[in-house]
Length: 185
Image (cartoon, rainbow, N blue to C red; front, side):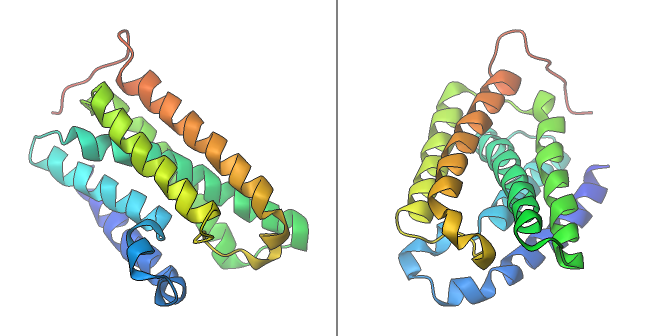
């Protein structure tokens, strides 16, 4: 199963970076690491899967994966649904984005019992995640959904709270004392 997920996530990650190509071309070099949100989240999960295949845990990468997979998975679903409500229709690519990003959010949560995250990992992942929100909504390096441009302040507010919910979910599933803990096979 881990190999199958790896074979799905690697091409998905590559496609995600290709999707951001036009935006990356106009992005200042110092923001490049923070602009491609979803493919970077997926890349974190690729590293988690590789670690699992090696029978290892990389807790900081696991924290970054669970938080960003959930956040950007849900974010993309909501943005595509908002696009539907604005335009009245969605392209085939938009439906693909909805289902693939929903899968991202779910897969990060499903593996939570195998993560070995500690509070410091959540804190470091929170710094990454909230810093990314600042870059997106203060410096306007966010993914472009031109039909939604008029709602950028509201989307930024939603994104901040989605970050907070993602952090709380990671705490709940990975740090809380009575959480489910499973061993890698």
